Amino acid sequence: MPSNRLNSSQIAGSSSGELGSSERLNTPETPAGLHGDRLNAPETPAGLQEYRLNTDIREHLETMWEGLLYLSEREFDAAIVGVADRIGMDAVVVYDTTKIIDILCEHHGMDREEATEHYEYNIAGAYVGNRTPMFIAMIDDLIW
Image 1 (cartoon, rainbow, N blue to C red):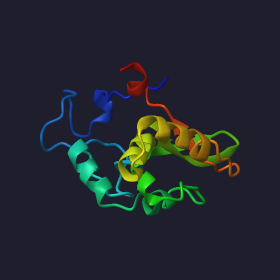
Image 2 (image 1 turned 180 degrees about the horizontal axis):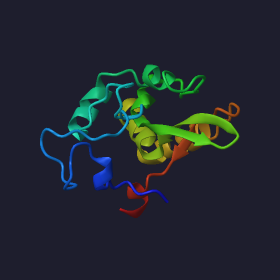
Image 3 (image 1 turned 180 degrees about the vertical axis):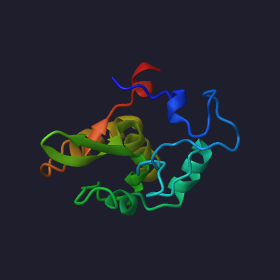
């Protein structure tokens, strides 16, 4: 497995292996991705949160994956946690189950039991083909 650590031969202009403030790494540009130039997303957690609040997540994801399917109500976009790539299958949007149930409670006046039942039957139970979104139970919600 390749190492992520740099050795002195990978650092331009350094014989000691330590980076000075004006020295630059002799490495390729940062690849496009969540924090790359392609998306112009900030790298700090607070910056990412602000960026997400001011960005249409669907439009943003469509710049990287074509043909994704979403839950029809845009209020559930706040529950999107990522996109899952699957071998031999199309990529799909991934939603946080707990956030969906929270949204049902807050926006539709349901109690937890009603929201859970609605989620299980009407949302998680709806199959619309290979691009049907996935729903994930976050580990923090399962343990704590």
